[in-house]
Length: 162
Image (cartoon, rainbow, N blue to C red; front, side, top):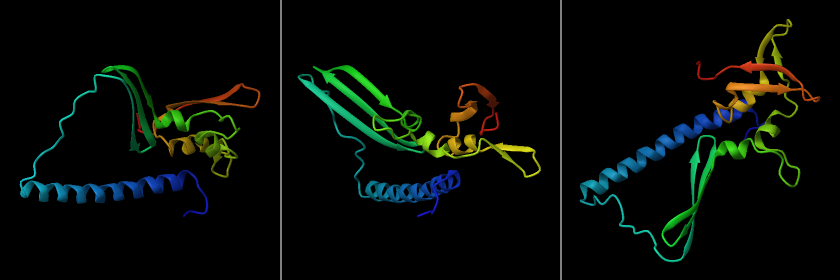
């Protein structure tokens, strides 16, 4: 376990996850090849949509930024409510009812806004680096506000090089 949770450690964890996921994928592929060789080629199970009553469903999927969830209400075979909760919604959330900050807010607390090279020249923006460690596309346009609510600097950058 790292002593400090920061942007570097989140990116290191993401890199480890890629290697781990590749190993899991390789093992599952080998199992699929073995099943195919033994003649077990069924790829799906027959499913019929329930036509009577109310049904609730939820599905979760692990993504690079966190978990994505789908929520569904089915009434007599008809979808009456469907919601998707994305990792960005959770990560960028405001404080909860108990006053705990969202993931982005917690990550940038006590983080200097600007990073200098020591000779007073502007080098980078630490706040963007912290947020990009969760989601590389999130701060393509970031507005930084002071405590008085005044925009002190607008930064238009993209981690993808666009």
